[in-house]
Image: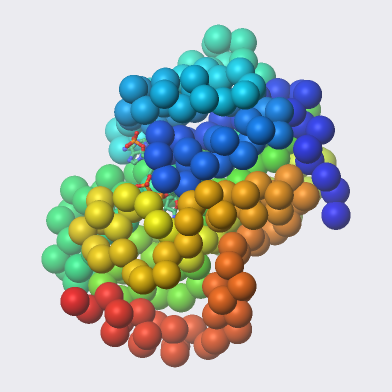
Length: 253
Ligand SMILES: NC(=O)c1ccc[n+]([C@@H]2O[C@H](COP(=O)([O-])OP(=O)(O)OC[C@H]3O[C@@H](n4cnc5c(N)ncnc54)[C@H](OP(=O)(O)O)[C@@H]3O)[C@@H](O)[C@H]2O)c1
């Protein structure tokens, strides 16, 4: 497997959703490995607090990725400021819970804009530059929810299934240009995610720090699909129909 650690000398790492949770921990991990960080999110105060803790250089670019066109504007602002990127991590994401037809349209629209459209827009812009240059690494944060339908969280799982499939296809295309593309598929994490999605946090959710450390090592070693946690990797062997019934049971409350 190729090692992508040397990218730190060729450009900064753009990370969306850096203000808290998994993104915050990924920023600490990448910065500790020497990457200059371009931190994005809506909460500028939280991003500044994070930037002041990082050992490497950090730039802050506030952006609301639920706004159509904002992902493209974000990328263009960074380029216009002369910052070269060698890494992109599309981590920003939100969830929603409830029967598919009861989730407010605006919630589904925002989620699609953040989880799918913004991530795909940034992927296209980044890969277009990275493949032309012949180096770079991209990680799209998906979920174990990408591997089967998710009753009572239908649109969220569907958004991650879209991004996961898109990411793996892009990986094949980018490989011949020397660019790595990975899909990070965590199981439940101990973050604010469930509160924001109006759902209960599952017992035994993994620490974001642990997931980020594992994921950063695998990503910089070029792994295709990264699943932190032994039991999450084991669960991939269970047929999708069984997992779907299990998810319906635990989410229906
Ligand atoms: N938690 C889990 O169990 C779990 C499991 C599998 C996959 N994931 C995925 O992991 C990623 C990170 O989730 P997390 O657990 O760290 O959740 P989190 O703690 O809620 O953090 C979400 C991040 O996304 C950003 N974000 C939310 N809305 C945004 C918007 N409109 N524009 C720009 N940024 C926005 C937030 O920043 P601001 O609020 O500053 O904008 C925040 O930094 C997501 O893609 C999620 O789907 C999570």
